[in-house]
Image (tube, rainbow, N blue to C red; front, top):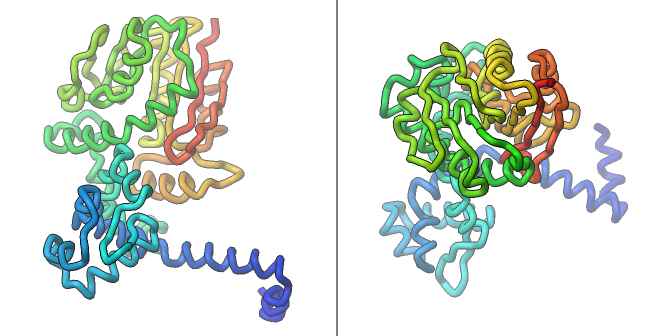
Length: 346
């Protein structure tokens, strides 16, 4: 906190490098909201999509986007600073990071609906005091129960975003957890079956059950060995018969009381010795994570029903439900997912 100390640090080479790195990181925190809005503009104007087809100069991009050249140049410079695109020989090109943005499943869909969260955070003090009515809570009304997803169009929007982003989650989950020896897996809250499609590709002999709201599972694609069971885990008992049950990005959508009731239902549906798999982004707990403890924690707060929990908090809920043999499996990309497995005692 001392200006004299800061001045002294600037005169010492090793400390000066650290101080300036901290300064850059601090400014990233300060300017982060502008970066996200610049990204949204690049997405909505389809600049990255156009450059994926080939390099283009400023006049061509201005004609395509309808943005005056001087203003578009500022946006392109911002995109270059974010390393999404670059300028070379008078033309703009897509970078590897920009290409990854377009090809990583779910990223574009996530950015496209961020305008809702951004409006919810327009007055962050009132938001954190609980004095606002977040718009995002209406974007995901399915979390309020079966009636919340009665609108087919709304259910389709939810299902598309979940399916788009589920591929990465499924890939990381199946790297963390082996289902060898399993006979029957039921995915509860599994949407249109994106996770089960990944499971079927890796374990083609495994029997599968998809359990989710009727309006959601109506869009499920047929899979070998798949049974679709429409229902609401908030209102209906879970079908029995599976020796593994998965909850993929389900718990953080819901309050502790709903999660506790769901885990009780899972425990009742599993046979003795059956297994539960939980996979979702988790809080860093005592070591806060910038992705999960900033982005996901605020997002779930805006939803009004969910909460981003640490692995320790989820494990405590599992033990309360009666589960044992709880194993934490940290994901290689915590912002995608981490996993926990647990067993119903014999």
